[in-house]
Each structure stands twice: as structure tokens, then as C-alpha cells.
Amino acid sequence: MNSLKYIIPLIVFSSFVVDCNQTEGADKTTLFKAPEKPIIQSKIDSVKYKAEIYRLDTLFNKLYKANAFNGNVLIARGKNIIYQKSFGYGNKQSNKLLNDSSIFQLASVSKVITGVATLLLYEQGKLNLDTKVSDILTDFPYTNITVKHLLSHRSGLPNYTYFCGEYLSDTVQRLSNQHMLNIMVKHKPKAYINPGLRFNYCNTNYALLALIIEKISQKSYSSFLREDLFIPLGMNHSYTALNIDSTKEHLTCGYTMKYACVANDCYDGVLGDKGIYTTTYDLFLLSTALYQHRLLANTTQQYAYTPHSPEKKLSNYGYGWRMKNMNDSLKEVFHNGWWHGYRTSFHRRLKDSLTVIVLSNRLNSSVYATWRIYAAIDGPKASGIKQELDEE
Image (tube, rainbow, N blue to C red; front, side):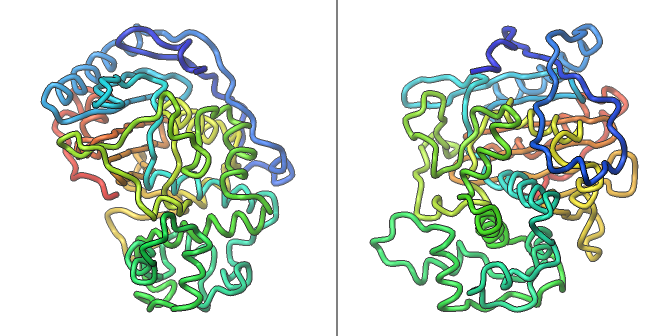
């Protein structure tokens, strides 16, 4: 794996050069180019980050020894990976330890990537976010729901993981996005609320966005991600549930707290809301490309980072991102995930270009307690700060 050359025993770090000449609000004429890979340089001033590395290592070693964490961690500030380490097992039954090549199911962190893919089509001039879903997916039976409503979880639609089971026979091994839509067309399960009324987190929204990506791009969702995102960014170890080899060497198993491997079920065939597999390093490449404006223009990213649910006061949701600390200089955009033994966390503090990636293949709730990581990074001045666990 390409990231192996960055390994240093126990503490791993590498460096990326930030393009300091990026301007606010990039010209739309520049947005039709394929995204560029982040520029790489090979060294880091480890002395500068020595205290942060020590505090982070102390934190995660303590969690691991307390049986409260099993997974991979990558922490970066801008161009520099300041901490990268693996704790525990990728496959407990075969006694296989995690390493920096280990591949995790992202669960709902996949929504970030689906959101980015949708906005790529918007920048290419192929998709208007105000378009009604029924104008794209012509059989869609719900009126006045727009692409924006899906992105911001304001559609009011019911969750497919709740209503589809009623209409599935025992012979259905794997539900697909199209099969999900067919059920909605035929049975029209009742919406929870009217579109635009308020925020209602719902996996159906992002499963529908995957279908919209397919319809607009004329590619499968898996192919669009591979060709327009993963390959251009050098995310060479990223896949969807439909194109990953289950025997792949570095693929992890998702576990309960008692290390019982959690089997896939029929819902694993639905993509967009979940279903992306990747490494901490590949996810860092995505974060770096966003910080460097090499993937989406700054103006487009600001749409994604804008709170779209005014009724939510303490936290909010943009286009594919949760957010908090909206009104001060510590604005944080993030997403967490929970699916089949995987708990995942992808946080970005915009002011200082911080990236926090924690991927676990065990149901450790410590994954979501990112306040501990921020306290370790920011030092003694933040030691008294504690926050509640973030939402999935």
C-alpha cells in the first residue's frame, strides 16, 4: 500500500504541501477539471508536534488498555499527519492485527463522500440542487422534494431500513438502491413530515442521492466514485460494498464488544448512506484535497458547511456534514457512523485545517468522544473542556 512508506514504528507521520495561493470563491470556469492529487513532501518537523504526539499516544494507549478502543487513528493539521497508529485486531479469529493498510466500512461517514460526489456534479453544471427529485427519478412518488432536501435531511421521508423489510421476501439476499426505490413507488410508505419543515436524519435521502448520481453521470455509483473521486485523488484503497473483494488481505471484520463478528445482511446492497470501505490514509487524502480546494471550490464547500436547519441551535447539518461551534472560530464539520460492528468518526476543524479520523471495527463508543482528542491536541488550556458524545 502506498501509505506504507510513511510508517515509522509506533508513531507515523507524513507531510503534505498546502497550496497557499488558493483564493476564496474559485472561478467556476476552473471547476470542470478533474480533481488533483494533494502535493506530497516527505518530511515533518517532529519536534514541533512532540507534545501533541505524546498526549495523543497517551490517550489512545490508555483507551486500548482499558478495552475501550480497537481501531485506526489518523490526526493531521493541514499538510502534516502528526499522529497515525493502529490498536488491536483486524480479524480476531485469525489473530490478525490492524495496520495502516487496514480497510474499514465507513458506515454513515459514507454520506460525506456521497455529498461531495453530488456537489461535483453541481460544479460540472450537470445538476441543479433545486431540482425536484421526481424530475430526475421520474417514478419517484413524493412531490416537492428537492436535491437540497435530500442533502440536508429535510425531505421528511421514512427510513428504508424500517419500511423495506415489510415488503421483502425471504429469498431476497441483497436489497439494491433501485429495489428500494421500486418499493417506494409501489407502496409509497407514509412520509414522516412535509419536505422542508424540519431536520429529520434519514438514510433514505442518501440512498436516493446515489441513484441521482447514477442517473446524471450515466455511471454506476461505484464507478463514479472510483473514476471521478478515488482514482484522481490517489485513494487507491477505497471501494464500495459492491466492488470490494471480501477476501482482500487488509479487509477488517466488524465486531460486537465481545468480538463476535457481525454478518452482512440484505441492506448492505444499498449504497450512498453507507457502504464505502477505505483506510484512514485514503480518507485523509480526501480531507487534504478539500482543504487545498483541489476537489471542490471554496464557494461550493461553504454551501456544504452552511447550517440548513435553523430550528437546530446547538448543532446542525449542511450538505453531507454535521457541524457544531457554528458561530465562533472553532467551527467543526464532521460525520460519524455506526453499522455492523463498525463505529467511525471523521472530523475537520476548519480554522486550523485539522483532520481527525478514527475508524473502529468494534462497537467502542469512545470513537465519538472527539473532545478528548481536541484536548490532547490543544494542550492544557483545553483540559477542562468536555462535550457530549456526537450523534451518528
